[in-house]
Length: 260
Image (cartoon, rainbow, N blue to C red; front, top):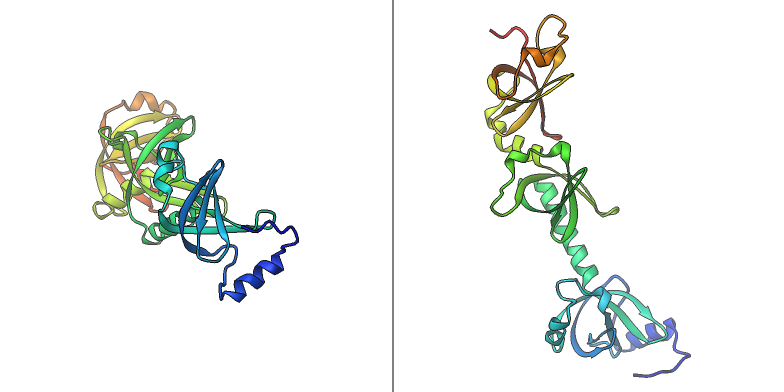
């Protein structure tokens, strides 16, 4: 490879034009890895200029020493990050390409608005940490019904709540998925039985199927209630009427007023 220090970006463009190559940063190209260096790999992309794949642009599952030998002579696609004038190499990335394709698949899932089973990778005070298509996501505690976790493989049903590629932000809702699954069994005005699973000063949380509904204190009766915890107990079964269904947030509000 030439080490001519006067080689410029304009010269690079001229070379590409001379050989009828139209390559730019942001393009996706096919290439064959042909040599390993201390900090990365050289890649033949057929443009009379070598591509360079730094180790940090290799996904973690591939960026391990035992996998590197398998890279030699492998042909695959790469994302062109930039042209390095000093080394006269195209800077390539597998990680960026996978990131782009992952978000494309995520956007498709968002458009389809389907229920997906995703793994739980960890927890913190705010909720669960998970991943979808290799992109880290989060399930807020307020959007989780712990009883719905599949403990055999540590997964949970969810729907996308926020998918923001610009900020690399994925937020899921387990409650929204559960409501989606049972929506055909629920309708406004329906009287149904539910089990009290939590008592708060502002109301009761009622489990209906796998869904947690809120029975606000103002909807318990026609008179003011001072001591809600003296009127009800955990695991008590009561009748309630569905008064509001929020499919987007996975929430149901119910009423106990005027129910015999």
